[in-house]
Image (cartoon, rainbow, N blue to C red; front, side, top):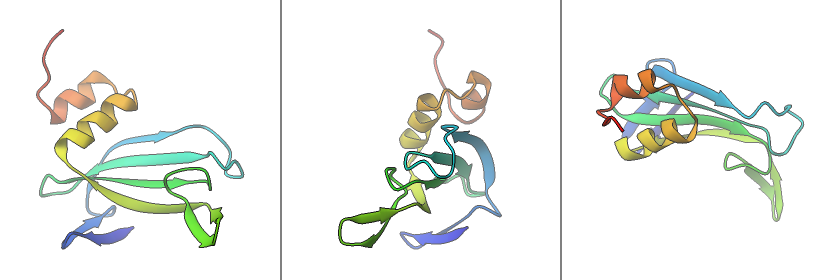
Amino acid sequence: MRRVIDKRVYDTDTAELVHCWDNNLGDSDINQCEETLYRTPNGRWFVWGRGGANTRWNEQIETNHWAAGEGLRALGPDEALLWLEDHNVPAETVERYFKVKAA
């Protein structure tokens, strides 16, 4: 998928795939969601997502009616780090991209 956001091109074909996540619900479930975090060659972060009608990725098809959808969202570095933390990504992956402190 390729999309322009704030005059920058985000493309899943040319970016580095950092981590994939899904909630293991079937495609027919309105809560089904999957997301993949990417990093562009220029070091910018974005997430591609796909999900059911009850997720952030939904698409409005008519007034008060929603369907499954997909899209891209640009993330800042802090948002990307939070995404990694929220999705229980292994510490080694987080440390590859971010300076984190020992507990």
